Structures are given as structure tokens and as C-alpha cells.
Image 1: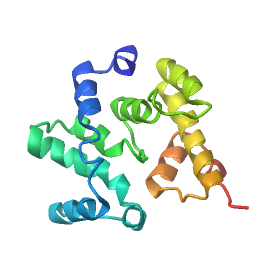
Image 2 (image 1 turned 90 degrees about the horizontal axis):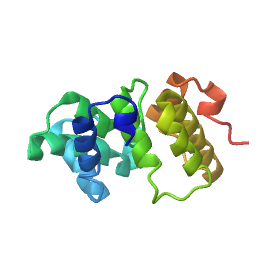
Image 3 (image 1 turned 90 degrees about the vertical axis):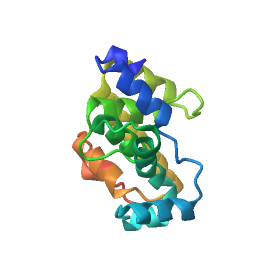
Image 4 (image 1 turned 180 degrees about the vertical axis):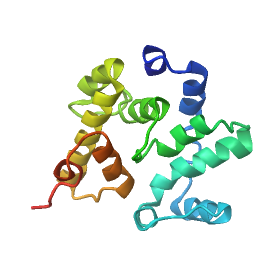
Length: 165
């Protein structure tokens, strides 16, 4: 478990892991409505790709429905899809565990998981670089939060926002 290897509170990591996808199956309309009802701002990227809102809505549901209101757990849940410019070790562990779970099938997954076992920061940088390369290859726009995270983890602007040439 990443949490134990990196000295994190395993109870918090377990709760964040169990609850991170509470709103994953909500349809786009419901995600937008749930944000509106809670007064959560929705940026242009989120409005165009509402599935990413399941992270923030899921954090709210974790608190409201399950009484899990520890801000560190809620932050990890809220950041698990797009990452963020500022991320705690718990945020990183959940982001990596979600993105590198064994059910994911992409060539570098196993190597990234192995790196995550020893170095969260290096794994974040490498995983973000891998994600950005994938998005670039597919012609999918990069969320501003993900680009900010990539820069915060040491990727250059060119790596964080590759040109579409």
C-alpha cells in the first residue's frame, strides 16, 4: 500500500480510496446540478468535460452522506482526477493509486507503479508526463489544473502543454 510505504495515515488513505469515486457514475447533468446546488464554481474545462466533477462532488458527498469531513481526506478525493498545483502526500498517493491501478492497461503502468512505491514526487512527475503525452496523442485538451500540477512537479511548460503540431 502506498500510504504505509510513504508514512501516511493509513486510515485516512483507506477512507479516501474507498470514497473517491462516490459520484463517478452520476451523469453529466447531475454533476453540474450538484455543483450548482452547492455553490461550487465550475470552470470552462469542467463544463466541457463534466465527468471530472465527480471528484469534487464525491468529496462533498463523502462529508454530507458519510460524515467524513477531514479536510485532508476531502482534498485527496477532490484532486484525484485532475491533480492540482498544490498536493499533499495523501493527495499524491490517491491520484497515483487511482491512475495506476492494475485494471488500467497502458504500457508504462507497471513501471510508474513501481516508481510510486519508492518516490511519490518522481512518480507524480512521471505519471503526469505520461498522462499529458497520452492526451496530446489523442488530441484531448489538458485541464488547467493538470497543467498547473505538471508545472508544480517540475515539468516545463512545453511538457505540461505540448504543442499540437
